[in-house]
Amino acid sequence: MEKDITISLKKDILENNSEYLFNLASKEYFSSINHSTLGTTTINFDFKKIEKGKLINIGMTIKKCRGSMAKFLIQNKIKKLNDIRDYSDLGFSFYSFDEKLNNFIFVKK
Image (cartoon, helix red, strand yellow):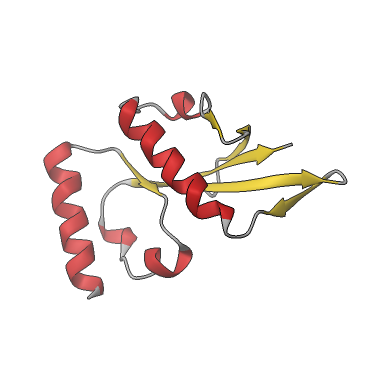
């Protein structure tokens, strides 16, 4: 199964000349992909809320956030990472980008 998913993704990446793979999958699903062979930079996303000055997980709401982000990326034909910072939906807005992990964090305050 892992091989089939990876092969299919690699084919799509090559056909579209993609520089990035926007990972909006769950950790479990994404672990079934051998992303090191894809030839792209994987960009990850996390959605948190701030309570008492600390970032905390949002639970099951994350599925809705992933879908909203996918819609944003597709509708706006995002190609540049900086353009992702413009996302604001469901009360979430850009908080930070971790360059080491290629991870965007959006928060709901």
